[in-house]
Image (cartoon, rainbow, N blue to C red; front, side, top):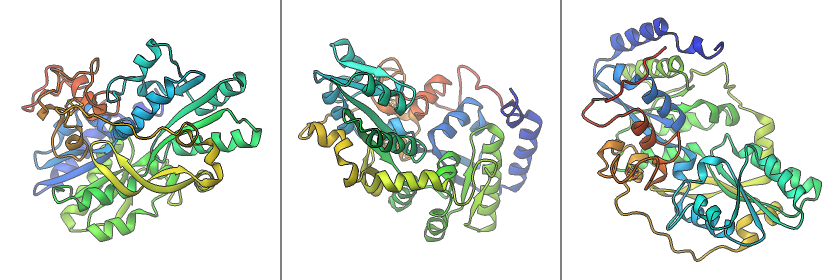
Length: 374
Ligand code: SF4
């Protein structure tokens, strides 16, 4: 497929790998922030092709995985109410809450619908004026602008039976939290290219300076990732720590000003809990007071829920890069994509699901070879 295959060229991948091998002289630990990058790395076997000195640590950049259990339980409570149509992207339906998931709510009679855009949910609200329609707005800086736009649109059109259950998170505060963790082993970051295409790279130089880590904005295809790693390793070997944009075909330094303006109008920055990690200051968005009537948490006053994480799930450690998925005892036994214990086994961007799908069973072996680059 044009525009995809050219970023999976085996010959170019080989050249980039040769360059990386020739540059590395000692062990380095790099974190790819985004779950989409993790999926691509595992799918194409990129980590297995790198020199032994390089370790890729999988970061917390899967929005489904980091949505806190409390918010999932709120979604379940709202979706189960009579008179509510609860709309969501499909991958949220299997995310386990404390005692059930959205599929279970639907099987028990709840009106839970899969949509492909928040604007679809707004249309459902227009078509069902006697119902309360709620859209589950989760994700990073990439999905926040369309959700903000939908709330803006709802107010402009005077649609009052629509609201948003918000769990949006921001990447730079997460990088800050990872670097401040006493267990942190990360020495450099591959920043998420799609996030930077919206927000630009302006927040990263101070992070790179403060923690003396290279941050390389990186895309998602195999050649993008290898180029990001190549540039990162070059900086590490030289003792540099700058912000470098290796995804210039999509990322402008200033990002997307129109999307940023929409975010600033509809949302405000807030502290946000990340599942398995805890509260990270300033790491989320909530609807600003001007749009409070569109806030599902406010409209349905769901609070005082008691949450229960499964004791055996170690997704918090996976999300912080402290263990690899196959080091969790439940991996592939009591926890599989069909019966996930934690959100990292649900989403296609979750590290546990990626390891399961591509049969990374530990010990550096695979029972099914990863798809080779190209
Ligand atoms: S394998 Fe399952 S139980 Fe273990 S950390 Fe991953 S999601 Fe949690």
